Image (cartoon, rainbow, N blue to C red; front, side):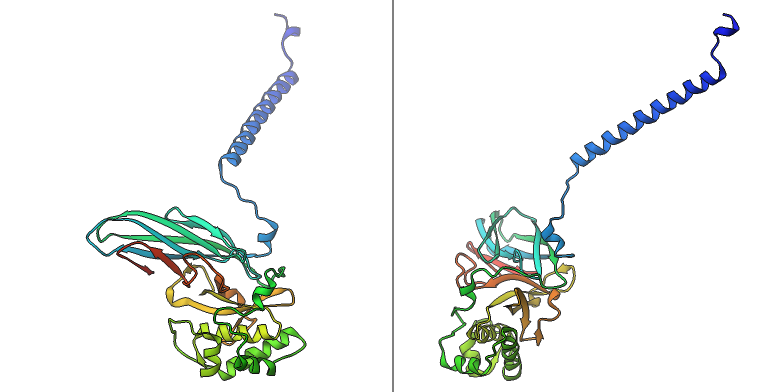
Length: 314
């Protein structure tokens, strides 16, 4: 081979550069393909516009012990409990998970009920049922469309609007501005009703205005009655006072009121003297309408059917 047929130094450098470029292109293609497959295999969850309106995220957990109290097999236990309310002006239930399979049902108000079917509990066996919920929490009340308007202005069990004793008090608190009427009713309840310790039996607004005494439930019923009689939609809420992630405890269960003013549902807690303040510390589990049907119709927290069973919330 003569000298003229050998590749020049410049040609060799071009050849080397071309080979390296090819290697980098192939490596990049492999990397992109791998990322594409990873995106397909890993679960993804886009944040909806609604969820972005609830910027703070709070995760709460609660659990129940379900115990067979006998030396005989219990073939089946049905257990019902509430999940957090689907959506209010201040919270949105975004995810629910549990240690056991469940069926979820909802009503027109946003109440969510979890139904568990447990089978073949051995003698003296205790099963622990755990529930976890992720909530979006609003820093400011989000406007919401008022549905079921009449339901929150009408009489209901324990909210006895037709009683003259309640009407006389409500008439003294009237005001053309709805929010001001709600504040006057709040001030009256706080100043005139003495707090009692928890009483298991619901007694209602009429009992409270007559006795001038009540626990958080009775104060909520009376305050709702005074608001409704002054044209302010009001609803009693059952839930928990809980300002951070963690475990919901039975002792944290509480009743308060939501009133609909200025296009949003706002929290009022006559028991603790809170009028539309520190609202992010309340976790709504049920909107108490008096029209609930089904296993939880007469229960604030849970219900069950099955023989020889004892259930406690942890």
